[in-house]
Length: 224
Image (cartoon, rainbow, N blue to C red; front, side):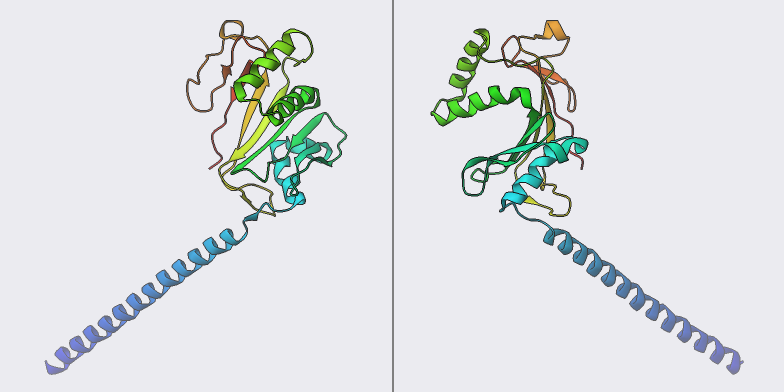
């Protein structure tokens, strides 16, 4: 009888030891997993760097253009020295405007070259100190007079966001997303069938209806 009791006690001690060891191992695995996660997060954070060179301005702005067209886009805008220049010549129908490094956040654009006179006029009026509504009114009058022209269907792609850090491997800007504008001068809700306010996220609508700057606005949801 004593032998049976002794055997039972011994078995109980072994089970207790194994349970303790398992708990220790489980804790160790949890800590390891947390360490790996933290390390990965830190590595991801390290990949983001400031947009502080002309090359970075070009690379990040090209994200506004369709992927298949990026290699042939002309790139213009303010360089790191604050000069408005042609940063790269192009050989296709698109022009890319880089982010202004002197302004907060990020805002780059890509548009058809036929829109350049209209865009350049806006930049010139802004440089003269004209306000947003004044620029709108002047360009509207010049459109009516035939001094400026927007071909219906001309598209503007805007790549924008609140941050100015980017991943040098992908050229993606932290938190940035794309927005599309399709110009239809003088179009209205009645002529297009589009609402004048967005019905829901990701839905097209018409902005500035009935004016020279009427356009279809499409704001896709962020990728994440």
